[in-house]
Length: 318
Ligand SMILES: Nc1ncnc2c1ncn2[C@@H]1O[C@H](COP(=O)(O)OP(=O)(O)OP(=O)(O)O)[C@@H](O)[C@H]1O
Ligand SMILES: [Mg+2]
Figure 1 (cartoon, rainbow, N blue to C red):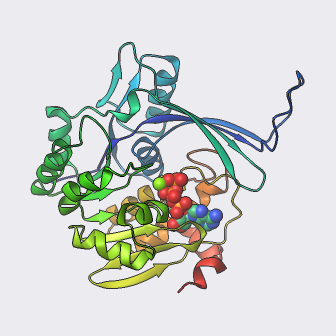
Figure 2: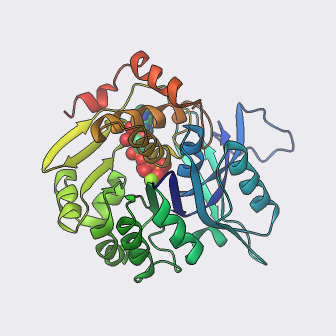
């Protein structure tokens, strides 16, 4: 029987600092509340959060042979992610991002590119995909996967019985060609609202979701910040509200939404209920600094769903 999750794609180190409202240019250190390093990226961030929620997770990705890479690997392993498919590339740097989060939640992001954008796609990864219950594909734009290899991986995964979810980050205009190749093998396509507008050219999320389903996705879930998520499922549109959390740092909300969604499906929850759980997962991540934020575990997230109100911003759009 297929078990667990294989997350395939972008792996980075995030360094999040909160709050940074101004650069002071003085020698004096300014005391701040939060300064956290954590594995992150559309694949590694989702892998970390899913493991925290009790899912058995493997990550296929890449780091460099620098200190950042050591930290990413150790951080993933500490939360229980299997890193046997995480390659270390000699002579390369680990993709890393410095995020300065302001008191009001806005953030400035500084990225140093590295090995993380090119996950390995070899026999071991294909075997893992065929044996997994879920494959989270977060490699659109990766030179190792674009152009047919990624689509073939997903075709094999689905033939082996896997459920395929897909998220992306910062797509280039050419990403639409890859999405056209990938979506016929995707059960749940989960872009953010900005990505959905950009890729579809639509100015309405319903139209965008419809386009992605026409391109082959079985279900489309568009994440839309505090306005919740728009879900196109079996031809019916739903808005799943976000929760009225007090956000500190919304970095990795999208990745954690995907992880929460998979964790709930893994426990047998129906897709719309899984989206509600995903919103709570992302909300708790937003209440703290960094990839895991204030997230504890699956049961604590379920109890939080009873405790928090729904965000008015998303209720108004229903
Ligand atoms: N300010 C917020 N308050 C409550 N929930 C939030 C907030 N921001 C995000 N969320 C929750 O997280 C989900 C995903 O967030 P978002 O739409 O920002 O994804 P994203 O743009 O992919 O994020 P990322 O920057 O991590 O890639 C939302 O659908 C919502 O449930
Ligand atoms: Mg995102």
